[in-house]
Structure formats: C-alpha cells, structure tokens
Amino acid sequence: MSTPLRPDLALISGWIAPGSRILDLGCGDGALLAHLAKTRQVRGYGLEIDDDNVAACIAAGINVIQADVDDGLAEFADRSFDYVVMTQALQALVRPDQVLAEMLRVGREVIVTFPNFGHWRVRVALLGGHMPHTPALPANWYDTENIHLCTLADFDALCRASHWQVLERALLDRSHRAGASIRVAPNLFCEIALYKLRLPG
Amino acid sequence: MAVAADSVGVVAPRRIAIATPLLLACGQRLNGFELMVETYGQLNAERSNAVLVCHALSGDHHAAGFHSPDDRKPGWWDSAIGPGKPIDTTKFFVVCLNNLGGCRGSTGPTTINPETGALWGPDFPIVTVRDWVASQALLADHLGIDAWAAVIGGSLGGMQVMQWTIDYPNRVRHALVIAAAPRISAQNIAFNEIARQAILSDPEFHGGRYIEAGARPERGLKLARMLGHITYLSDTAMRARFGRMLRDGDGQYNFNYDVEFEVESYLRHQGNSFVDRFDGNTYLLMTKALDYFDPAREYGDDLASAFRAATAKFLVVSFSVDWRFSPARSREIVNALIAAGRDVSYARIDSQLGHDDFLMPIPQYHAVLRNYLDRVATEGRA
Image (cartoon, rainbow over all chains, first blue to last red; front, side, top):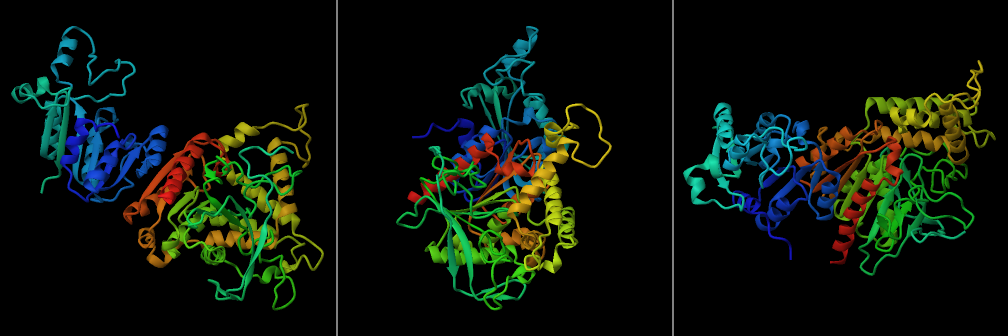
C-alpha cells in the first residue's frame, strides 16, 4: 500500500520505546512520524519550515508545527519529549552544535543522522581536486544546502568535547546496510551515520 | 445574476428563538433570546458533519452566498465556504450565527427587552466569549447537533473556538483557531479603549440611548473603525497600497484638512461604510468581550491547564505580517496545546496584508484548511 520506509528511518524506529513522546525536527512529509505512530504508538510532533511539506503533513494527519529549526527550540520546555529526532538535516543548520545542545535539553534522548564526509568517495573527489558528488551528497558546492558537513571522527570529537553520551550508533553504506567494510574502517566506508545521544548522568 | 458553481448561491437567514434561560458571566440572566442563523449544505443522517463558523468583531451570520440575486457583496467568508471550497458545503453542514449582543438581528442592544418593552440599548449586558459559546451550545441543541465535526473561527472567532474546546470538550472534534491569541495584550486593550472612548465621547451617544434620541454616535463609531483598520494592515501593506500617494493628480499640497492622502481616503471610506451597518453599543460590548477573554485566568494563568480537559484536535493558523494577533501569540496557543498533550498542527502563512489576511484566499492558507478539513470529512464517514 504505502512505499517502504527508508531503511535509516526503520532503524530509528527500532531505537524508540513504544508510547513515547517524540519531536521530529525537519520532519518533511511526516513519513517517520506516521510510521512511528503506527508501529510504536508514539505521540509525536514534527517541526517543518517548508509550506508544501506542512500541507502534506496536515493532509496525512501528522501533527506538524511550522517553524525554522535554526530559530532554536526555545518554545519547548526542558525534557518535554522522550526523544528529539533529526534526520539528514544537521549539516544544513547554521549552528549544528547549538541545535544539538537544545535537542538534548528538550528531549531525554536525541537521535540524529548525518552524511559522513569522511567516506572514501568524498576523499577521492577531494584528492582529484573537486568537491564531491556522491549518492549521499548529490548537490553542487554552490547550490548545496549543506553548510556544516563533518566526518564520523569530527562528530565523535564534538560529542566528547561536549560530554554527550553516545548510547547507540549505526553506520550504514549507501544501500543503508551495515557491511563488513564499515566495521573495519568506519570513517572510510560509512555513508550515513545514526547516533543516539543523551546528557551524562 | 449567474451564480458561480462554487458559491452557496442565494441564502436566507433564519431567526431561531431559544427559550432556555442563560446565566451570563456578569451575573445577569437572559430568560430567552433569539439568534440570527444561516446554514449551508445538508446535515447528514448521523448528524456528524456539522461545522460551526464563529465570527469576529464586526462579523455576522451572513458568512457565504448572497441574500438576493442582485446582491453585489457575498458573505464575509465566501472565499472559504461553498461547494468545493476549503469549508466544502457538499461535505459539511455549515452553521454561522450573529452572536448575542450583535446588531444584525440577534438579541442585543438594537432589539427590544421583553421585560421592559423598550430597546435594550446600553442596558444589554456585556457578554463574554464564554457566554457566546454557551449560547451557541444551546443553538446546537436546538439544531440537534450533539458534537461539531469542527468549530472554526478567526480573530475573536478563534477565541470562541478555544473556549468551545475547554467548556464543551465532548462536543468538538476539531478546532480551527485562526489569527487568534490566548488573551489580548495591553496594546490591544489600549486600541479597544480608544475605540470605546471615541464612541462614548461622541455628543450623539446620549448615554447609549441614541436611537430613542433620534441620533447615532456616527463620528465615534467611524473613528473606532478607522483606528481598527490601521491595526488590520501591516506597515508594509499600507506602504505598498497607499504610500504617500495624493488623491489629486496635480501633486500639490492643499494646506487644509480635506481628504488629501490616499490612506486618508481609505480610512474614511472604511469608517463611513461601517457606520451604515453597525451599532455603537454592539461595538462597545464586542471590544469588551475581546478584552475579557482569558481562559487561562481560572487555571492559575496556565493555558496548558486550561486545555488539559480538551479532547479536540487542533489546527492553529497565523499570518506572518499580522501584528494585531501576531504569529508569536498563535505559538503561545500551540505551545500550551503541546504541553497539554493535545494533537495540534500549526501553519504560519506567509502573507501580505496583516490581520485582514485571515479573510483572504491565500493559496497556502486555503491548501492547509482544505487538507485539514478533507481529513475531518473522511473521518466523519468512517
């Protein structure tokens, strides 16, 4: 009936406890929230800036709040959600570190996904003297929305420096599988990274 | 006149008498009252497709269609109500009324007080949003409607929608709160106070008994409306529409107080046309209803607590350049609903005019309304 859920979204739903309260930042057309409502009985809200996506969420019966993630989460109370989720939007934010800190204030746990800029295709492109065009990063340097790309190592360093606790991590290739090569050299072979974080203590 | 396919066509209002006494917030009691009502579309056999449209400060029961084939102006929200329009009259039975205290036929200052045989005039009690909702609930009883599929309103109408979900949680399935606020600000009360003073200080006001005196506080009412219209448009919209344009093409200043700038002409026109159709006492009490609205007040000023009893699902809509009821005020409503654990969606519509935008057929606005109400209609059939 419906199109199959993106594998990274399916993986995220496995990390979410049934019946929890979820805030999905940059929720798009609400596919993840719709899936989680059906399979995990979550009560969720999506944050979305794009008019068409907002209208699509409303048509699908998804709770959507039209707002810009870059404007921050000041409207949301501390610990008001069990999970704050953001898929494939981190690298497009003005200050990803500040938004992550806000997510950790508002949610008990944070789930975030981003493309790994340390992947070998990216490195090969740069060695060849060009910005990369990869399946995970298809846009041109001048029209990409991605302004704060990072590698797995960079993200891990930010988590360490900020004392954020990594509860789970899943590293996927472009067919959204976690293959043997990723286990051997994650920062070379992972294309999409999924992290589950929380504040220490 | 050829009626457009998406118009409800020629409609006739009905006067409905409610015999049930109504105790008002001010302590006074109405032993019965009449409401002017228009309906569009058909109530289904399950009586599950009824939609209530609540009007704002100067609105009335005539929300859509025309009163005669020669009528030039349709109802005040004709852009949104009709066959195939966002509030689709092929799916919904739409009810709109002139609120209690109004001046378009419902019991109010311009009708006769049956106990004295005289015009109510200034003795008509100041009614609140809660009183209106209670009177609308009695109307729903009269029409045989247990629960509304949706209650919809903009501005002061949106406040009635919120009050419905708090006072009658089991009688509202969906609440559409448009360009509203959880309570108005000091600045807003200040605008209302100037409007009231304009009317009260008009020499033709006669303590509110102007009809008996064969007079009308026209200047006051006109000033009140002119002030209102300044606040219904954004600075940018006024600049775009009027700028510093002069009415006379010669570009010369006249050095007198006649209409000179286009914006003056606009405001005077709005004021003059309002005086012909509105009553001073009604304007006074409508602004008071706005000032008093504050559902959080009896919940320790916590709006989320007020919404905790609500069971409706909510759609909240704001307009980007509306400064009278700004998007930030709509977010307060949304935040309280989220804190109360209610289902809510919020659309912030990029708009051009200001508060007036809630009556405009802005494509994104209508898409959001349509998408939301299409689901309401589908759910009603399930």
